[in-house]
Amino acid sequence: MADTIEAKLQRYRTAPFDSRFPNQNQTRNCWQNYLDFHRCQKAMAAKGADASPCQWYFRIYKSLCPLSWVATWDEYREEGTFPGKI
Image 1 (cartoon, rainbow, N blue to C red):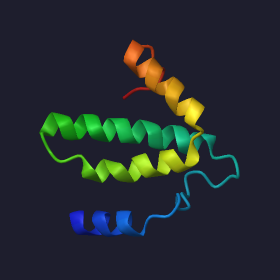
Image 2: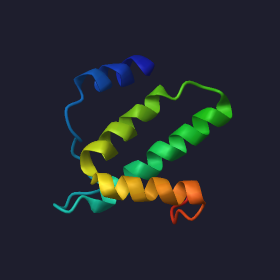
Image 3: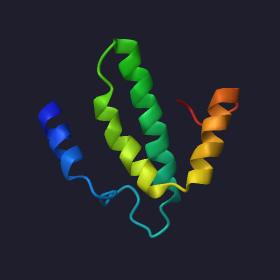
Image 4: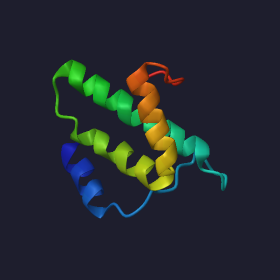
C-alpha cells in the first residue's frame, strides 16, 4: 500500500476529482481534506507510525484552500477554538 501512495504522491499535480464533491464550489472539499489531514496525523502519532500517507490530504487541501482560511484554521487549532472535530 505504501508503494501505491508513494507513486501517487510522485505523480501528484493538483487535486483529483472527488465524487463526494461534484459541484463547482470546492469549499466543502477543502474543509474535509484539511480535517482529514489533521485526523490522519493525530492517528499516526497515536500509533507511532510514519505520517507520510497524510501528505496526500495535505497536498489536496493546499491546492484547494485559500491561504487565509488555512492560517485562520491553524490559529483556531492552536487556541483550542477550532470548530471541526479532529
